[in-house]
Length: 419
Image (cartoon, rainbow, N blue to C red; front, side, top):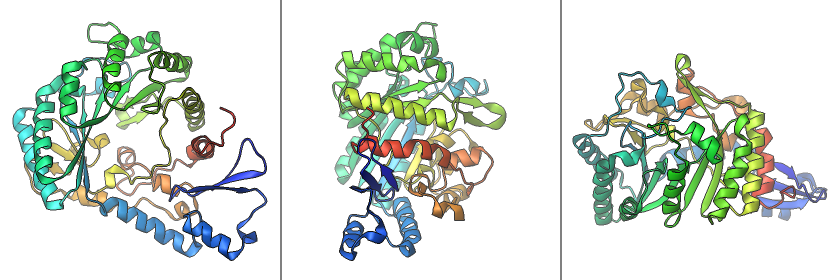
C-alpha cells in the first residue's frame, strides 16, 4: 500500500502488509518508472512481489502460521468468579445456573496430563501460558498448581515457558507477584477505564465500592517487574476520561515503552444474538484508536503494533483454551459454547470441530484484491460462528481498516507530523 507522508508532500511510504517491510520514496516514483535493478531491490526488501506470486505467498504464509511452528499457546480459565461487577461484563448476562466456580485440582491435574502429552507428541519448543478468568488470581491454588508443574516440566525438557496474566489488578500484592515471577511471568494486562470517577462507575467491587485505587496499586506492583498492557474500555460518553488516565499514569512514572497503552470499544453481550456488540461505528472506533495512539506515543507510552501478523488463533494448530470444567477450545472467545468445544482433558482425541477450524477457509475472491488481506485473512472465526455464518464465514472489516491503517503506518514509522 502507498501512504502519502503527512509532513512532506514530496514523500510517500510504500508499505507491504504481508511482510511488514516499509520504505520511503519520492512521490514522483512509480513501479513503471523504476529500473530493473531498483525493482529487484524492492523485491529483496519484501516491498513488492510479482502479481503471479502474490496469491501463492498468501497461501504459504497462512499454512506456515497455522501449522509450520513448534510453539503452543494455552489460555487457562482458572475460575468463573470475579471480585468485580463491571457494568458491561458479558458474564452478568449468563444464566444463573452457571455457577461462579473454580477449576478444581482434579480437573487441573487432568489438564496438565493432557497438555504435557500434547507437548511431547508435538515436540514443542516453547509454551505461551496465559492465566485468565473471571479474575484468575481468585484461584491461586490453580495458578500455583499449573505454574509450578509447567516450570518443572519445561525446565526438564528444555522448553521455553512464557507466562502471561490478564487481571483486574485489585488482588496483586508482593507475595502474589513473587509467585508469578517464579512461573516466568513476562507480561500482564490490566484494565483501567479512564479517570477515577469513570472507572469506579463502571468497574465496581462486589460491595458496591470503586476499584480504581486497588487497580492502580496492583498495576504498580506489576509494572515494577514486568511489561504491562493497560487496556481502557471506552464509549463516546467517556472519551475525555482517557486523557485523565494518561496523565495519571504519566505521574506514576509509567510513560515508557514497557507500558503499552491501548483502547477498546466497550462491548456488551446481546443474549438473543449470542454475540458481543460494540458501542461505536468503525469510523468512530478508528478515530478513537488513532487519536489515543498519537497522544500515548507523544507522552512516551508504547502502543500496539497493528501490523504484527498472526493467523487467527481459532484456526491455529497448537492454540488452546481450557475452561474450568476441562473442556478445550481453540480460542478463548469460543469458551462456554459446548458446540464449539474441540474435546476435553479426559480425551486424547479432538472432535470434528477442531479439524474444521484448522482447515477452515474464509477467503472469498474479493479478498485477493483487498490491500488489507494480510491483516484480516477472512476475519475472526469466533465472530463468524457466533453470527451463524459457519466455519468458513467471512467477516469483512475493510471499512475499519481503511480509516485506521494508513494513519497508523505514518504513526508507527515516524511520518505522522500531526502528533
